[in-house]
Each structure stands twice: as structure tokens, then as C-alpha cells.
Image 1 (cartoon, rainbow, N blue to C red):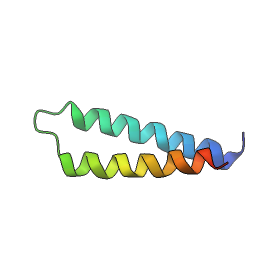
Image 2: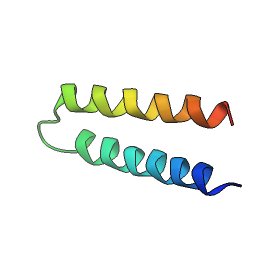
Image 3: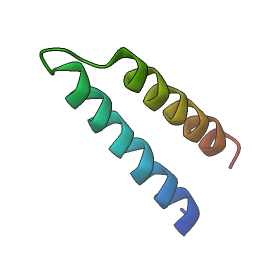
Image 4: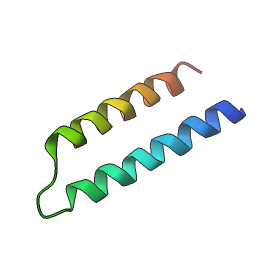
Length: 50
């Protein structure tokens, strides 16, 4: 595993946590969650290309 790949996986896990935290709030921000999911998808695609 390269350093770049490890960094991407760390960012991906961080986005997972942020999405989960926002989803469990009393009034989750759907716009924020959508943006985080898009970032997560981009990271997943980049990881798949490595």
C-alpha cells in the first residue's frame, strides 16, 4: 500500500464518520450529507483506479 493510497483510505473513513455523525443529528443537513457522499464517491473511484 502506498502512502497516497493510505491517505485516501483515511480521508474515506473520515467522510464515513462525518456522514454518520450528521445523519444522527436531530435535524441533519441533507445538502451537507449529499456533498460528503459525493466526496466519498470520488475518493472511492480514485482508490479503485490505483
